[in-house]
Amino acid sequence: MAALHSSADSGRLPVGAQIAVYGVNQIAMPPDAAWRVSATTAMELRVESTGEDASPRWSIDLTSRDQKVRPTDRVRGLIVAPDGQHVIAAVADRVLALASATGSVTWEHVPPRSFGFLVVSPTSIVGDAARVFAAFDNGTIIEWSYEGRLNRLWHVPECPRLLGIGLDFLYGCDGHYLNAWRVDAAEPGKPPRVSRTRMPDRTFAISTAPNAHRVATRSLHTVDVWEASADGSALTPVSRFNIGTGLPLLALHPSGQV
Picture 1 (cartoon, rainbow, N blue to C red):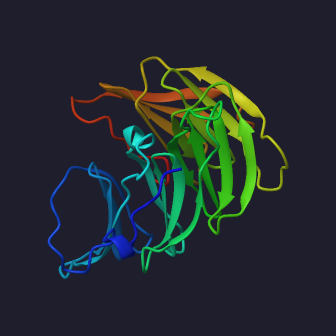
Picture 2: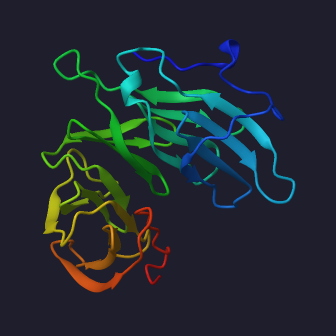
């Protein structure tokens, strides 16, 4: 099992410490945008204030101690709880929640290894007002509360590597198909898949509107916007436009209009 460096073994850096600059591959902010959390390619998770007086609050090294896990070392997703109290990260072989004020670990989930020895890694993580969803590379999707209570665990053959949570539906994409599941908070057990749509091109990013049945997908050179029917049984193309070259990043406005 991988172990995280802690403040006791110099994992967390003191405020104001000189920190090496590495590429940032994840960034997230709370609703009030008073601070931001970022993850680097060197497995450093860092929280710092925003604005003109921006200063680091804390930093922690997420490098795995287990040599068998270290080849999977990468921060694949990063979100902030709506109340700003927790930072949730999908990293290496686990989903990890940290207190945003101190960087201390409040809960974590490490899935059992496949066949007893193959490392299982999270591929994506999303959250809405009350729930966190994470997909894993063995086809598992898990739903928690922000406090770490496990609500549901189910297996899907599609093994989605991208997740998005919108109004009524959880979306998952394996790069070729976009699936939608109904995830009513009161519904027990495995949520039913309500649609499966072939993507026109290889998809590298998806983004959803939290208060609309709208999802955007990004290939290398195009963005497609889709509208889900009320029951989620069909996705209708709304628009498609070409974009220039660059990183396949995508963000849909909460209204779903931009």
